Image (cartoon, rainbow, N blue to C red; front, side):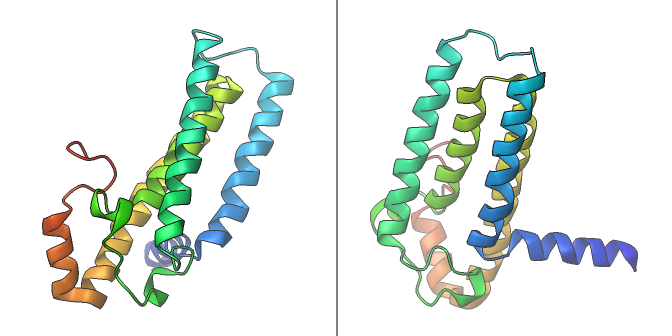
Length: 164
């Protein structure tokens, strides 16, 4: 019984309104970055190139995330509230550009900050984004059935074309 309750809480978090998750995840990443800045001596190798790499990832993430929202006006809705399947623009290349943008931003912030242990929450948030995308796909399959199946055939890549 306890496991089902924990799984339910976990699923509710994954499928929460994206703005709710943003209010939890971004401050956590920023606070941990500040703590790392104060107490940590362990930096990501190849300074300053790793920091520049992180900044490039961050900017790419912002741009990709922005493109996804420009086309998908309901992207910040809960999955079950989305009324239309978006298949044009960046969504014609990958199915989850918004999450790709977020993942790039998480990793970009971590590399830009430059402390090794801040990669832990960044990677955790990337994994949570992937799991959210997988859960949302189940909802979209149920909600849009044949239309979504056709979309998956036309756009087989979730995040990175020809890779994943």
